[in-house]
Amino acid sequence: MACEAGDEEDLVHAWGEDTTVGSFGDAGADDEEDLAAGNEAWLEAPEAEDALGDDQGGGAVADPYEDGWEEAAEGEGEGDDDLVDWPADDAAAEGASDAAIAEDEGLAWDGDEAEAAALEVVYETLNAENQQDGAPEEALLSLLREGFATRLFPGRRFHLEPFGSYVTDLGLPNSDGSGRSDLDVVLLFHGFRSDSFEAKEVRRDLVSPTIDQLASYLRRQPGIVLKNVVPRARVPIVTFETTDLSVDISVQQPYGVLNSWHLRDLCASGWPGRLRALARLVKLWAKSKAIHTAKDGALSSYGYVMLVTSFLQDRGGVPALRLNRQSGPYLDADAALRHVLDACSKSDRDAETHLPRPGQLWREPEVWEPSASDSTQAMAKPVELFHAWLDWMADVVLAFLEYSEGAEGRVPLADRHIVSVRGRTQEDLRADVTWSPKRREHWCPEASEVFMLIEEPLNGENVARCVRKEGLWAIHQEVCRARDFFATNPPDEEGLPPFKALLKLKPLSIRQQPPTSLGVGAGVSRCFGCGQAGHALRDCPKQQAAPPQRHVVGGIPQGQKRPLPQPGGFAQEPPTKRPTMSAFGAQARARALHATAAAGRPPWAAPARPGMVRAPGFGAACGSW
Image 1: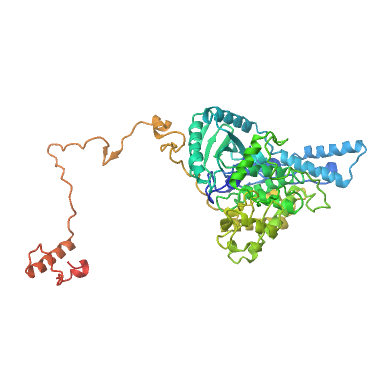
Image 2 (image 1 turned 30 degrees about the vertical axis):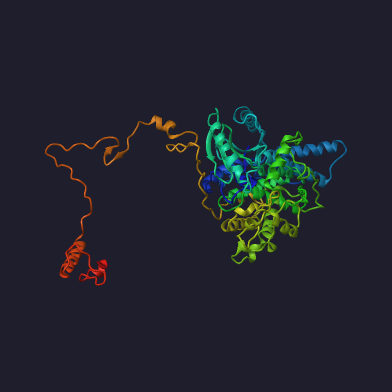
């Protein structure tokens, strides 16, 4: 299951701003072939023109590491040969079969019904291309839960819950060549508070010791390779790999689970398949333009999904499920933890995903029948939805840049659009964000520069707080270029905007990304020979295979004595105890002694303080004697 790397830092409750762990790389032309080839199956919509009298088209996105958020691999496709069409014949045949059955039963569709049925086939086919069975994830979770309960934490109540793309089903095909998918899980204990800034003792008493225990336990398990241990990040994690998966484990962080459940239900609501299909298109476009990670000042994958959801809500395609609370619009970390633990302890689980659902926070998913009379985008194909999303981004979300006059981060909230998925008006949102525990850092441009505004629906933080000035303008420039590209280039062979050609354009700007990780903290062994976590230098296989070498100082190996001088040779002279006086210093010293003798004092006597004598030319260079 591919995971969304950039999402973890947004889905998990944060202590600080921008500390994360991951592996990053700059976008380049050489990587684009892998990106395009890995996602070729859904870059072109199925055609049902022959069977239904209407051409179909669309596209979707691919991201090799989405989430858990934390690994990045940027790239762009080069050449039409790398992109393969969708199985148009199968989709058309399926749509034609449905129409034929209806006609045989005397229920022949009219033109609008046939078009709607064919459109549903497009979205179903597009989303089905990326579905995963989740068998490796389920097997690993069962193995870890059993091992933790019987050997690592016997007698303690806990839940090991996944989050990220495994839960939301928004992961994308893995095109980085590793063959592994990402899985993010969190270990939640009963009887403790959430790991938050307000409960710092939890980090000391529970999280840090648990991280060390996990590292020690996992490095001894067969089939598991411990990759990294980061105990002092804003979200401490342990990273390990199996044959099929790359896994990140955090401790006592409930927001990631709640956010994933909420997003899962949003994807199952509204116009069928629209949110997942458009989210994948947007993420593929953002990845191809190197504006898809929060680590380099752009927007995370989770942020783009929030943008897509808010756009579809504005167009009437997705409902707002979040319930209004009388005690305030947001949950604190301890309340979020209680909701997760209560939901995990109950047997009430989602019928399709078998995952828990907290019934007190949002409504159950509701599916809407798309109707052209309700919205102009109801009958739009995937690429047409993407084009409409670009217009919404430029005209609504980024419109304030036209009059920012170089002070983009200081534009007041009243002059900007707050992106939200809770169905609130802009006036209500400006009042709601005052409840945020990070209001000054995330929602107060007068105190701290804020370049983009996306409300996190559960804790009230700004998902786009990671966006910097360069990243904001990079997003704006790519949005404008995409709109102009669609306006100035002819449609593709299906009469749709040329989405595949857009993906092949090189990024307008590429920003350097941070290093791979933050290192290993105290109490966790790391080899200084090969740089890998999980063993010390004395146990390093590379060091044991190499012949022992002694440290050499001055041509003599450490531990050996210097050889005695040979007969007839020169004896070693003792080292000079103090440097030899320079010619200038010797002359100055002689003049000072001469002046002292002329005054009737012995050479070693210092000159009298009231009438200090200067040697001619000496005082200016060396000061008074």
